Image (cartoon, rainbow, N blue to C red; front, side):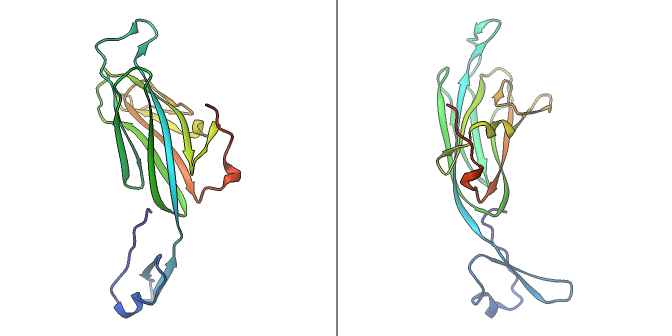
Length: 177
């Protein structure tokens, strides 16, 4: 869950007394239960590079430049590439509760006549994730086939990486750029 606050109006006077990041609910016996939640402000940056080359034919003039969207916890940012080998840094700062969250980078068009994109770096709180980017998975839209450990998106699809909040620095590898 991402910075969503749930509450039930069973006893409105209690709401003012509970901690700021609390979910309250009712158990099977009608007793109000409070669940404390901890949120972590987390900045995630992903660097992607467009590749308009074709190994067999060289530069393909009829391909369009791709437009992609990165999303995390309901927030997203978009970018349309405009030149071959262009790199772009997608950045989102989100309030994450403790646990796993899916970061996705996805093509906005399903047309197969567009350039490829490669994820070259992933940073959490400004620290490169290094080889951990290969823990992501890429699913091509056309075939719905999923490739684990791929950072090169040769066809329109979605690249997904699961990160955990809070991110501990001892779990971060040295970045390779």
